[in-house]
Length: 595
Image (cartoon, rainbow, N blue to C red; front, side, top):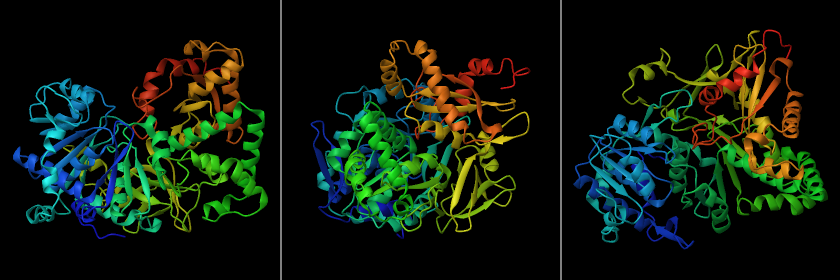
């Protein structure tokens, strides 16, 4: 537990460690160069001085459009040090989306990572309030400053400076720290206003039970534009954990081998992909497939011990650990001891499978509006299938329809320039409406069952929570994403976006041509295998929940195509709109169809 009052306290704490490395940056040659506490202090001071020289002051907005790298964190700290407000933007956004957010926030400065991001800003349209653009990568960019040039005086500013340290303390807990635009799963992006006090109060309590220390290592690869990653990095720095920045997801396997993290935090889709890779690899060998199946069965008998943090005994478990479980841990670098999942529902099937191979994933829950952690499982307080117990400074209650409502110091200030949405986000007596349906059991463990606005209601009046069912489908190696549809219809159906790497490999073994994905998903054998996958999931559902029809799409949904949020959550409204014709075809004979 910490006693942070503002995010500037994180900077003060982290930069008081002298020559100790607090961060690692990956150089072009593949070497990981250390950034010491003194280095960080000097760089933050240097950038803060530049920003002040440009007239950026308290309350002014500075946008950050970049992948995870040390410059991102330096910019964040520098902006907050001078009382400014940073506006993190996802690198996957289009120029039009970036333009909206830059104009809406009134950003005076934009700090971007590369030529590609610079061109997005240039293509964003008229930006009357934007005065400076800074590019992190080396090179010459018309009208832009180079980050390395701004860092030229950093080495001379590593010594503690009384004036600078006093400036850090002038920022208070009620001061606005950041405007984070929601990913827009339900409509127009909204700027979530989080204060220094919101963020600091959350960091104070979120990680204490894990007892992280300077012996730990963590890779920062989840987008820092997302509040979960931002919170994680601040918490890791407070706990003296060494951070290694991985700017691209496809570099993660290399980073895990090089860094061998002891702490691994990811969104559920990352865990799902690792599971699918393990199952997909064994599927090509009947022997490996039988060994994996045996190992999972063996582990399942010891699931309770793994969830409780105990190492099972017995010859069978030890043999399975040597042959299978240890190999899976190697995919995480071989040294990870703590696994955390957040950003989206993990799903009982995925959590259970990992427990069965000896890996206990601590699932948590939060929202951008809650800074973000509301609840989290911990060692000695872990219940699989739940998101843990609420932090001690967060109050929970449920509305009549089951919606979770919250109060506490981490709850956001409101939506930027949007009084109507702000008013609608709170009850008359001041509780924040999460939009999530949930419950708390007798021991205080919180479960989130679905999004209130995503519940499907059949024409027969039955409510269906799609996410748990979709998660079961995604447990299969051939399914990348799934979207249940059928609101106001007699029955529900499902759209499936295949894991094409696995599907094409399977198809080759069946003698099916794989060059044309549109033709591939219509092949009779392919349709049959997906119907079997859906059928197995249906077997565990009530009749009204079961998916009567399926449509396999010829695309793999992604953040880039706008169907997934940066935390890999489904944008249901986008998917339903994009495939309206295909969904209509599923229900064309609904009046006479029995299924």
